Image (tube, rainbow, N blue to C red):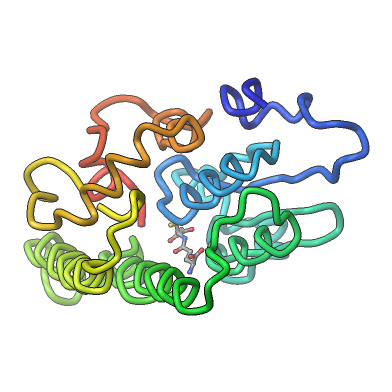
Length: 225
Ligand SMILES: N[C@@H](CCC(=O)N[C@@H](CS)C(=O)NCC(=O)O)C(=O)O
């Protein structure tokens, strides 16, 4: 497994009887990142397929067959194809129950799902590349950053409030920007110590372009939402 974490895209470490998992990913995609982390936490080896956005690989007919929305991440598990990070995480949890991602207690589970949904429904979609492009074109280039910051802060504030009474190890932040969000910062610092998380980091992926990507600022600036 250590081999898997060191090199998750090396499918040679999987046993021949295990279904072959393939993840279509982009190194800067935050949606792909959470799936990489989950696969690593569950100890599931997978083949990493880099989708080159700069070359428009998401617009090829082959890719569109896998996900008509033309987004990463996409998980292929044998004959099955699942796209959308939230659905992939739930699929992995059901199909591969080892190292559970979700608690058993229904309320705690709901809290986890609510936090995940805030990220995937109320933060990421509001500042994804295509939305930022529209803001830039229709409103003005100078509005791009404030728009992204406003929506990230609004979502992070909600997460802070949601998680404030839940003092788990994996619930808090970072550096200057993140000092406003102490709970999220603490959770991130806890994650940072895990090898499964380290192996999922954008700059550890085979398609990473290493120039000028700040470590945690990368989550906010360097990642492709
Ligand atoms: N709700 C989806 C969103 C997927 C998504 O927005 N993916 C982005 C990267 S994080 C993407 O593929 N963008 C490519 C593009 O905009 O062309 C999920 O959570 O997986």
